[in-house]
Length: 369
Ligand code: SF4
Image (cartoon, rainbow, N blue to C red; front, side, top):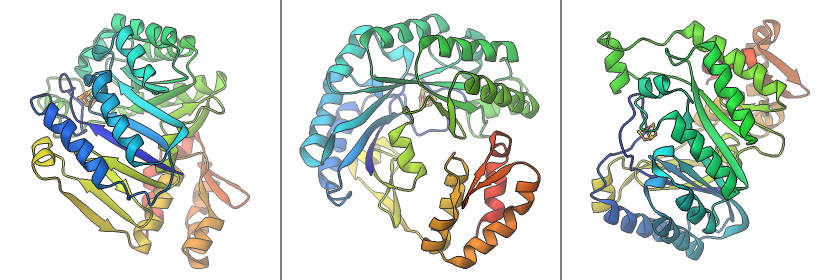
C-alpha cells in the first residue's frame, strides 16, 4: 500500500500551541499552488508506479484553499499517479474556514473523508489554545458535515488543557459520540517551549499543563471510547471496527508514502526525505534533505511506531528483517513491562495496553539500538 500527503501551509491565524509548519500570510498562495503542481509532476516516479490507496490534504489548514484550487491539485495527481478508484481521500478542515457550500464543493471532487479540527466544544478551552473558531460554529460545522454526507468523518479533540475539567472532557466525548462519526483522534496537549503558549506559561501568563490531570483524562478517554465500541488502535486514535484511517496506517505500518509541499516528509522503504520548511524557498527553489536509514534506524523506527499501535511489535517481522539476536534482546528487555502489566504477549506479538501506552516513548527508547 502507498499514499500521498499534500501539505497546505496556510492558516488564518497561528494557534498558541502550534508546532506544525504553517504561515498566516497568503501572499504566495498562487506561487505555492504552481510550485506544488510542479513538484507533483517532477516526483511522479517516487512511488515506483505503485498505486496510491490514499491521498491526504493536511496542514496548516487545507480548507484555506477553495474547491477550485483543491481540484487543480487532484487533477495533477490523477494525471501523474495511479490513484486507486477506491482511494481514501482526506481533507483536514478547520471550522473557521468552511461553510456548508464549501463542504459540498469539496465532496463533489471525490473527497470522501473529512478530518475536522474541533479540539474542544468549550469556548474557554478554545481561547486558551487561541483557536479561531467558537463552539457554536464547531457544532454547526458538524451538522453540515452530516448533512453533506461525507462517507467518513473524524474529529480532533485535545485533552489536558488546564481549563478543561474532567466533566467538560466527558461532555466533549459525549458530543462526539452523539454525532455518530466513527473515528476520533484525541491528543494530549503538549507544550513546546518555542511556541507562543510555551512562552506564556514560562512568563506565568497562562496556566501550566498538569501531568496528573492529563493522565486522568486519558483514562476517561480510554474508558468512554471502549464503552461506545471504539477500538484504541493507535496511541491517539480510536475508531469503530472498519473505520481506521487508511492513510495514517501507512505511516504506522512503515509503508511507502510521498509527501508534497513545504516541510512534507516522504518515505520509500529505505530512505526518508523532507522538503524545505519555507513557503518562499519552496516556491523559489524547491529543495529537500534526504537520509538513508541504517539497519539500526529502521529497527528503532519499527519499535517506536509499532509500540504505539494495537498491532504491536511482531517478532516474526523482527526476525526476518533484523535477525534472531534482535528478537532475543527485545524479549529480555520487555520481561519487566509484561510483569508490571504494561505489555502483553499475543503469540509472537508484543502489544502495549492502554496503561502501557502512557509509557510508550520511554519503553521504545529502552529498546532502541
Ligand atoms: S490550525 Fe492547526 S496548523 Fe494552523 S496554526 Fe492552528 S494548530 Fe497550527
